[in-house]
Amino acid sequence: MMLFLVSCKRDKTEDDTYISSVETSKNIAENEGNKERYTIGWSVNEASREFYKSIQDGVLAKAEELGIDVIPHDERGSTAEMITGAINLIEQGIDALVIAPVTPEAMGIVSDAAREAGIPIVVLDTGYNGADIDAFIVSDSFGGGVLAGEYALELIADHNLTSKNVAIITVEEKFIYARRRGEGFRNVMLDAGYDVVAQLPGNSNPIDGYLAMKKILSQSGDDLAVVFAENDRMALGAVQAINEAGKKGEIMVIGFDAEPSAIQAIKEGLMQGTIAQESFEMGELGVETANTLLTGGIVAYDDRVNKELYVEVYLIDETGEPRQVEVPREESKSSQKEGPPQKNQIIPI
Image 1 (tube, rainbow, N blue to C red):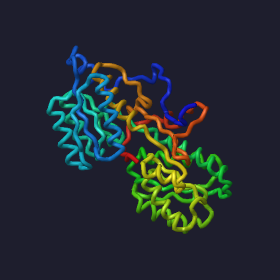
Image 2: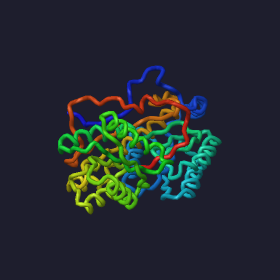
Image 3: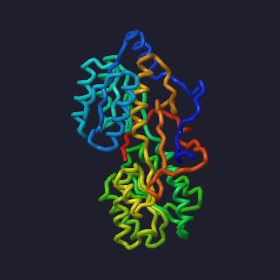
Image 4: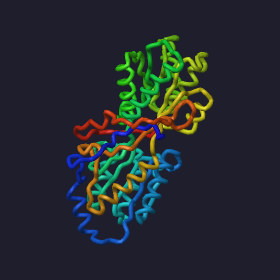
């Protein structure tokens, strides 16, 4: 048995491997020589949040395994703290910067400082807005949306739902990577002959998720099978609106992030599922990638044009536990996407 998970990771060929910022990596390796121990600066969006705590645990665990020292910095959700803290790390003489920025639009300032110091930059989770970086590590959001759609079809069949309508509650448009979740879900449902009758913003919070769901209910009435929220906070808001309308168990709710509150809601029968991110693995991969760059190695990107590496996602079903299946995972469509670097930002959901 294996976890039901998806990822756009795939077997790498020579064409799929690529040295990020080749000259930077080469120069670093030459300058460092046989340095016995590296030091990485780790700047985290908000260390008090469970999602980032897990990423940080992965960073520290992999650093210990590789014999790398880590200087941590908590941005505390502040753009100013992110910039000053990251620059302070660079000025302390770190060998590489691993960062989960609270404000991707400010990454240009950090990138300029790192490049002047001649050190590589690895960005985790929240985007980099087109700044000059060496690697971007992010969850397979599109694949997670596909997984949510496939699970929605299963729920519809299992619960004998007759409606051919579904709805999506979205995060803000500027959060490009998180929006891929809805794209994956939409593709699956449309291909299966369902109509996406509403796609409304929930602005990444439960209050707006609640208001979006109330509007969807007023428009669709009883004719709705599933609502997919691009994060769990909005999903929990949707649950409240559905309960107030007396439709608990009649409309399936699927979220994204596997936050503890969402998992509890699933166990109570208020939600039917959520997509979980491998946040610990994200932290580990960040340090592994930084180490590869420092030693002049080759980074095997999933999307070499945009310097992206994808972390797996998996389903937590209506039992509140990770889904176990006997089938191999399939490659998601996001692994096929390549194009020019985008100005992007995502949220950890």
